[in-house]
Image 1 (cartoon, helix red, strand yellow):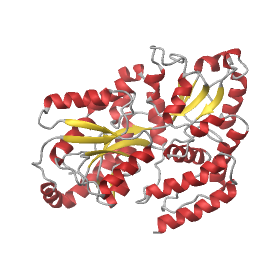
Image 2: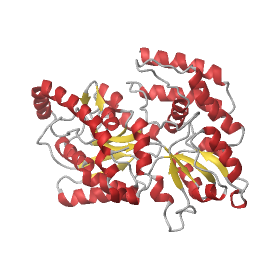
Image 3: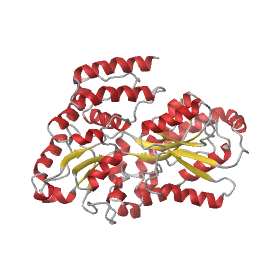
Image 4: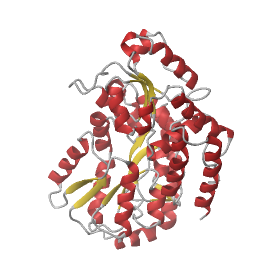
Length: 430
């Protein structure tokens, strides 16, 4: 994948955005005045935990240059579900405690539809040069409500040293993965290891991993028309892979409690041969300070699928201005600062965070430092978004409620998917 291909698609998205802007520029000017274009002062960023410390470094740089508009971080819980709940509760009481919201890419529609975030002035937030998939997540009904800050694609981390010793290649299919594990786990140094870990706890990560299994079996949870399709043979095949994985021991039982950090820690402790994860793990797993046993012993490949390479669920983070913030002009300027190329380059270099700017994926120096960049770019290019629905919170809860009992061995797959189809039809019809 090259940035040229990405930018060609981005140009289409940008052109569409300019048409919208041209048709509504007068309205945007008036709206900007209502938003308080001269309103400046301290800003609070509400987002998940900064595991790298690089976000604080960027904020320190901003604060030095803007002593009267200092930014402080309000770190929300690690779980995406808990983050969303806290932001929603804050918005429902119209609290001004948060100025800038770090929104999971699936939340834009919900927050925009409920008027919890402001539309962003198109003239201040150009879309050219950004990944098309990231741009799409920042829109609601054709208007931009958030700035793409981080993108994300799931990848397969694997123990390259052990695969080499077992004389197997990185798998491209689920059956190849199972066969590779059988050979690797026969090695003396792998005798206490398990095969594969993902994010299977009952939270947003389960929705992501289940969606990827479905997509990697050729299915989808929602059709192009927005209608749920949760009870198809392809969806059943995706769920069957997860169920069988826990039944036959491919997935360790403790993976039922894995969120992102649990899986990362298990992989770094040399407990897993394979791990489905986001790219931020690269830097952490390569630490040589004693926190990782796998530094320089792992590689990255595309996710495997039923009959070939699988499909990632699109991840990432967008930044939006709270409709109830006090200092909105400062908040918008801070968002522009964090989403600029310099800050995105810093996040990639220091925290292995996937940028939303297409040209960074093709820089030779960055490719040399991060050998997985091409794989990540392919993952993001082929990734599929989660459903863009106003009641996304209800949708993901329904998916988790249906899937977790099945992979835990406490419910029947066919019954669960039939019930899930009815529930999703009800949610999206309201």
